[in-house]
Image (cartoon, rainbow, N blue to C red; front, top):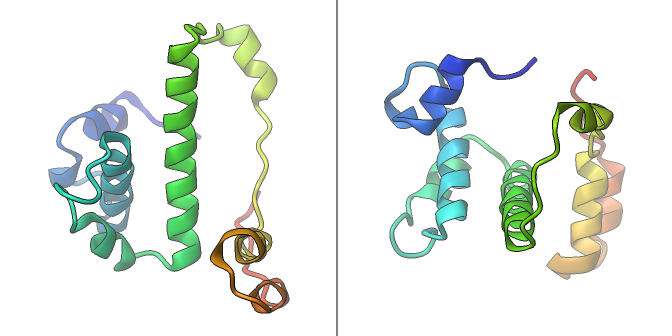
Length: 132
């Protein structure tokens, strides 16, 4: 699993006209780019409506969270002049955690969305997990 050089070059280049990505993937990549460049309000107001064509609210929250997390981490590490670790150190972090969408939605309902009772409803509906 991973990205080959052709895919990385396509993401860094003109991904919107590449045949390597589905329209949904292009919308997600564009949204990450818009968040990174902070152009979601003025220059790219079409990015969110395009994302909504392919993803539900929970998926959009997750795409946004992941993109923003990496933006934060890059700024944090750059600001503190933290060097990226070499390969042997990075190999210690090969395990990944899957977030249960129902748990995340319940958390957001309780903490941010101010929707009383929605958390219990979200937990009652368990979304299918991707194969790990």
